[in-house]
Image 1 (cartoon, rainbow, N blue to C red):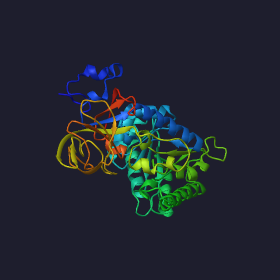
Image 2 (image 1 turned 90 degrees about the vertical axis):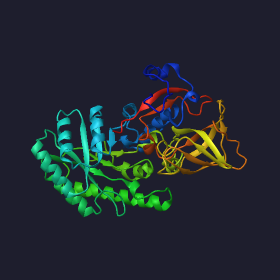
Image 3 (image 1 turned 90 degrees about the horizontal axis):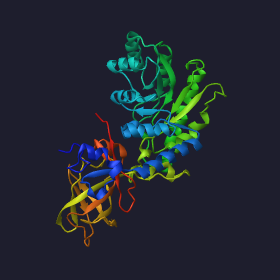
Image 4 (image 1 turned 60 degrees about the vertical axis):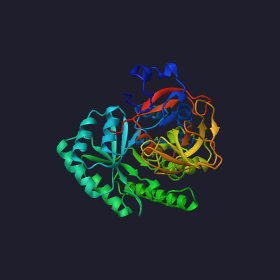
Length: 419
């Protein structure tokens, strides 16, 4: 039995180890399949690093997008400050993998997790920052860590939110009360302010961009109020962080002027984006909303694609393929049929006029023009929307040299760690 559904059924462990050497043709792999294009990954890593350098911001990419050690390390090698995670378990993975700087973009209020962090940061080799959006969260951290006797105070960023958004204090007054509580605890240290603008908007129109801009201005106002009240540790560096993959241009416009890595204006301040989806991009939501459609700075290329075989043509204008909700994402838009590889061929033919009408667990319904010649046995390539829910459906994804090559070659497996 093949334990990775991305590999041919007869593949052995030795075959997997030799992928980079033998470079088998993608057409020899089974479906359903999701591939990651190495050429696109390289482009996206370089494009984002260069954009951040020009914009004057740092990057702490969200690791929950891929949960892959190799990609995290490549992001660090490209200049990232550290890795952002979303849950205590993801945090433990980051520490186990030796990530030097880890930001938990969430409140940490589970006693066992707090004790774990205290134990695993005591040697100073890893730095962990967490968020707080309530005094109650600060009280829990204080009580647990006081009994754990940490040698290093836990860094806390005050999270600001907005009405109708996700987490985060809703008012400046609430946020300052949280900051005061952190300031009063000897086992905690105030490390900056944080927010997630992506929960407040979902498009790239002027109204959405205005909402994001206003929120970021409130984030800066919170930082200034904390500084004015003397709640930051004297002489300590702090972080301002916001920015998913949809609005990092607006984040840079508002926050980058506050970055001061030398402390020439009085305090060392870093500004960190937390964009994660950029590394693979997509052919759906992020392709439509990416800031690189609004500002100069290169172009992201979609690195993820789905592949499925036509297994039924039961009605005119309808094809069923052998991939479904268990294989392809659908939460930010249905997969988009892009091209077809006819049965027994390596030829790539554009699949025009085809759309996905519905998905079941293991089937996708593809609506076709009346004159479509798509046949049982043909393989369809799909553009996908939302990298995060693509990766977490796969224990391993096949890495191809270049998905746009005449005959893509599989050069490795990208294993994921989602628990």
